[in-house]
Length: 281
Image (cartoon, rainbow, N blue to C red; front, side, top):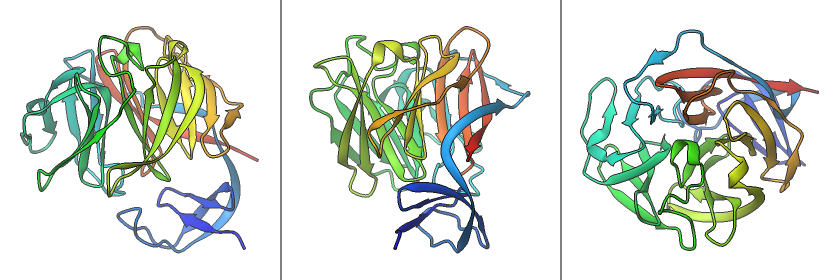
């Protein structure tokens, strides 16, 4: 008897494999039970992406733009301008809410289940900030690279990169002992680490990274193409490669949103979305 975990994104986890499904109802969050029927098998490996031809111009070269990755019908967006700043720099696009003052670093933030997750700049601490109740939780990350320009991803000046996929919340980071890329699965309720996986992939080779269906995808050091992928469940490399962009310049942000099956991109002072296309078996 295979165990089945449903997501609201058109993909479910069945006995070690991901499948596409047709749902007879869509819920607002991942926590609600879905009634759906699997109808074709997916390797859950990305074949290619297709980006919108209408990017939105921004003032800053660096930054992150986010919606709540747990909500299907989310139409609110948050903007973290530049690669460092305090939370006065975090704006909700529609309401321009101001948050409490705390310094963030990098472009690896995420909004998930009503909370803003980010790296507390200059410290080995990750922060979970409740956007409604303004409650702060802190997760200390010992023996990690977090300052002195020893970045995880140099192109975006990022030490810690949060990611959300069909299974929940992750953080990508680097140990201060070597150049390997590590990934921690996080419990978003307790804001604690459930497990840590060492991919052994050198951070010096990576421009950025994102997680889709439990697979970690790395771009090359110019952020033009995905050149390496790693299955976090099987803890082994995956054969995957596809183009991200044709141009040069700063790619500050590249994050997957499982509720929309989109990559959010901040590229050369513009933001855009890219549709993910999976391989079929």
